[in-house]
Image 1 (tube, helix red, strand yellow):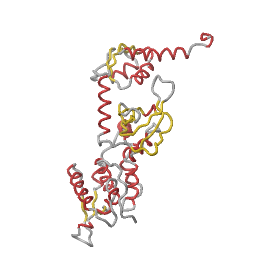
Image 2: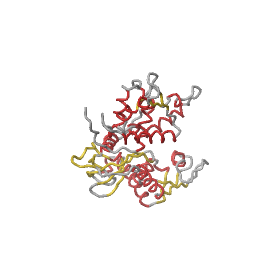
Image 3: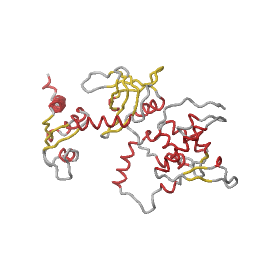
Image 4: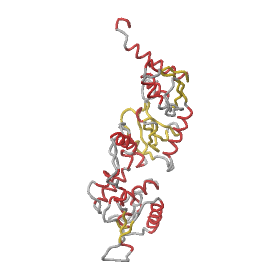
Length: 341
């Protein structure tokens, strides 16, 4: 057995604490310190078999304090045959404290909302490393199939690029993919070091460093064309643990800055749907004049054009032109063949 630690991949504090909590919930009998340090994501990469793990043990002690400060009940269990021996203490989090009371139930609509909320988890609920660590933990006391299924929703993300991008972030890889921007006739190849994959306004975005541009960029996953491939012999530059928050902050700022002024036909489908999203929506009956915020002009133009004559765009002019172009394309596509000759 090797006595040297594995190559250290970047593991955030949040990832390590989450992996530790999930592991301690998954076990019925508890895990020893050695079990945790050698198996759980964030520790095992630095664990030395039959070697000095003093610094790692101190990290575990700090993490235990952090978990308890969060209000999570971390229990210690002594071995009956070896009382007082701290080396053989087992740690666990009582699973029953996280189960719903028997008198709690959800309506069909409530369950639907919970399932929609679960879309932000998918494979992102656990990194690939954490899933592999949980497989190992099953042999240390967790019930078969119990750890992940009980706590991670299973709804899947539609975009095929989500999983390869997540794996690339786990492993510090640079990736390449074809990206088709609106208005361009053909996609262009982009070489990107992924930093975060985030959901904003119900759409998934990749936030990463565009190596050709030498700057961070945000890409819509739905515009990635074809497979995502790893670029060999390139290592992604270091990124801070707050890359996800940075991406969301930039998207929020863009959403706030972009303002559309539209008019909807009262009582129409557009009035109902868009009225709920209007900047001044207060639960009252929607009015004909609406103000909408948006992050992507082309996505909003696609949506507004879909309402046909129920929507009229006042501003900005670029959005007005984009909607008009789409409506003209629909008109031209439905002209009789003889009218086109």
